[in-house]
Structures are given as C-alpha cells and as structure tokens.
Image (tube, rainbow, N blue to C red; front, side):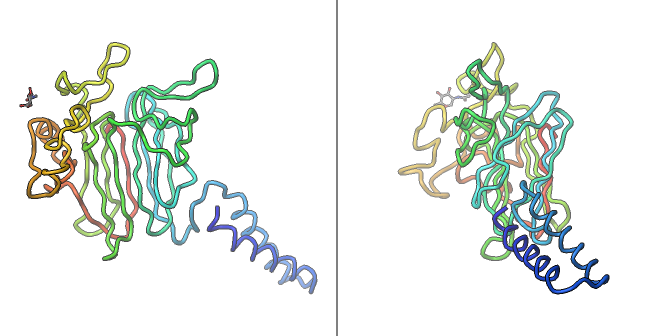
Length: 270
Ligand SMILES: *[C@@H]1O[C@H](CO)[C@@H](O)[C@H](O)[C@H]1NC(C)=O
C-alpha cells in the first residue's frame, strides 16, 4: 500500500485539475481513465508493490488439511498470516529486493477467549497475522532473497530448524532454475527423540540442533564454519528423506539455489 500511495495521489490530483480546467469530451475520457486508475490503486489494500514491478509468489495447498501460511520479511508484506484451505491457492505480491521467509502453520484454532494459535509454526501473536513475528520451530521454511547483489534470487527449503509440513518451491521460468523441496512426510520418518507430538500424532520433527542444542548439531562455537560443521546422524535423516532441502546450517550440498527475475510457486504437500 505504501508503494501505491504516490501514484494514487498523483492520479487523484491530475483528475481534479483536469476537472477544474475543462469539459471537453476527449479529456472527460482521460479523466475517467485516471479515476479508474485511482480507484484501482486506492482499493488495492493487499498490494505490496505496483503490478509492473511485483514479483509473485503463488501459494498453493495440496494437503488434505488446511494450512495457515505465514510470512516474515523485509519489507513486511501486507499478508503475514492467512488461512489456505485444502486445494486453495493465493497470489502474494512482493516488491523488488524483498527478502524473507514463508512457512506453513498447521492445526490452528481459536480458543474461547479469541486467541489464535497453532500446534506447529505458531508465531505467538494470538492472531491470524504474524505481523513481524517469526514461527516457533520446528517448521519447514522456504527462504528467499530476491535481486541479490549480483542480480540473482537466492532461495531454498530449509529443515535447519526441523520440519512440519512438506513443501516445494518451483521457479516459474528462468533458465536452469531448479526446484527446492522437502516433499517427504518427515513426521512419519522422524526419530523418536526429535518428535513433536500433539493429540497423539507426530505433528512436527525437530532438527538435531533444536532438540539438543549442541555446537556440533548447531554449527556454533568450534563448529561455526563450513569446514568444521559436518553432517550429523540427525541431519542425514533429513537429507536422505529430503535431498533438495538444507539439512543443517552449512549444508550447501545442492540445496541453496539461484534464479533471476521469475515468479515462484510454493506448494504445500507437493
Ligand atoms: C545420534 O548420535 C547420538 C550421539 O552419538 C546418539 O545418542 C543418538 O542415539 C544417535 N541417533 C540416531 C538416530 O542415530
């Protein structure tokens, strides 16, 4: 909406000036066109950018259950949390150079006092919108940096903080752009000591780092470099199920991808 305010104001002022100056028919049509433009932009409350410069994320839910996607990014998108029913899809517009993450929340509900929360991926706001708050791990993350320093987009699917819902990121076009994904249901493959159980079901799977917090699992302290931080017995559980996702902090084994100038499809339960 911020990006849309200037052209909207410009459109309105030109419309008013033209209205004052003349009553000619052709110009009346121009006035009409400006008015349409103004109304279009003014009522575009969900827009993060002008159509011409937007990058689009098409978020689709193929899961047999509802997913409540959430976004956290810079700049913040108008949609930071929403419901996506099974089989539903929504477009999200992101401005140039947007960077951030999108993840799914599952098993969400509102308690009698009106407080909204989710069994996985919850952002703790008590509302549908995350409004600048991140998700509580474990959650499968999709991560994006659009228009990086070299002009490329960087993106991945990450299990560094664990897993909750299968997800796939597909670049729509581009040359040689690859798919990032964790399509397997890690909840069914999750070692007992990493399981998050709710209502008798495994609803999410922690990473080794999240479950045990050791430097070797988290790539911290003496393990804080790509050379010193190696795959662990827990990261390989994720890697073998989801080879196209990042399995630990310094995992750059084919899962950190680049593309340029495209839109992206984000599929839950691909
Ligand atoms: C991973 O390694 C730790 C430490 O050696 C061990 O306690 C644990 O049982 C192993 N877990 C699996 C799933 O291999």
